[in-house]
Image (cartoon, rainbow, N blue to C red):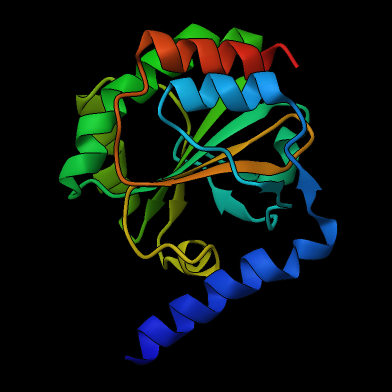
Length: 183
């Protein structure tokens, strides 16, 4: 009960603390492209909380280091079936658009580095994995179910939040990402 209260409070804080900085998602073309792909953009852009985490391949990186890129921020775990199902489509999306400014950050929630390393290697996943071993970042983002994904535009604002897995490697999603990356 206490953990649920903390998660709920963290989620409210994340989204409400940023409301003064909220901006309307302006482009109808962008909203339409995502709607055609079955994804609804937030009514207002939200400033994400910055955080730093160890990167699986070494070193530490912060979300602010990726300013100017489109960031696909995904919270996941190796034991999560839906996470495992969507990872190949995330890899395809990453390979298709990484040279156009897309960065995928897969924040592993609560697992050890060796488990994450083995999973990424065995599944031939090349996008960056960040290690949230104590799940403090997952909690601060109000993650209650995984996978949960956020899409952050080049201005550094969250424009999409999706709980659950989908196939990211479809023509309609490609069109949506091409529209976003061209902005």
